Length: 356
Image (cartoon, rainbow, N blue to C red; front, top):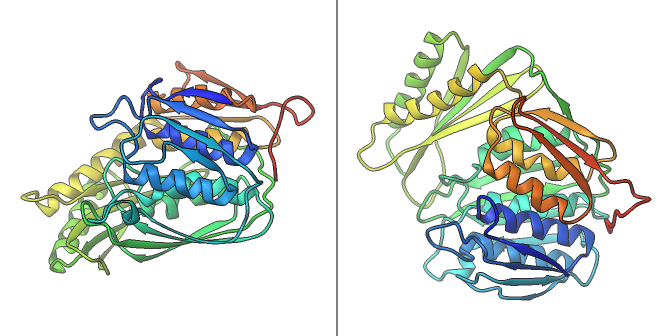
């Protein structure tokens, strides 16, 4: 059994999700202690518990410690990952409902299902656009297109938007199985092609998204960036607002967002998203800070060495690199000066144990 200290590094949910994905893929039993010890409310929150149970479902794992607030988990897969039709609802672990981020559940099970034999359809219910988590717009417009270049065929369809704290969002994920992952080489992003965006509200007046869109277009135009934004009123169970920007370069994609809050103007929400995008644009890097740690896992499972340059070497990235190396599938080298991440898969002939 592989023992993992969940308090290591950034001490958050990324450690848990990475371990669950790799345990399902390799069949290795794991024990994680001190889960999310670095957070204000440590232990398994609703989205983490849903991710645990989702990962267990697809590989028939035996689990101990799968309870809200638990800081210890044993996860013992009993079969290779099974493709199929699944439904995972974050609100099922909380009777009052939850906006726990279903994007984190998606990222836990995506690679195992992509490597499995056969295609899968997964219905996910909960929070689709939640602060401090990848938004479903980011998953659809940045994360999945970037993984497509590595051989992963997956798509998402957003049925309903789910904001904090009510949730109630729904997404359909389609995954093609039998993937052979290829490496990624991304040191130069090329020229900016366009910035596109969505300014969205649910259960709020139509003038709000229009104001967000107008503000963002003005800010980006002044900065010399060509932008096209849509202002939309969408389906959701509760009021919510946000703006989500995607920058498309010749060789890469990135995305940033801002969320509406009580007594925050529409213009301020747009300012937040634009500030993040412009800051990244000035770095010249092809890979944003968040995608930087998310690419290590697929690169580990690829057939050849990967190399890419990030805007910032985050604690999430270095933590994820260390955790992944514990499974003996790759060596991860991070040059913090040049901000280059190199992932070297260990050959099948040596210690590789992927079960598909």
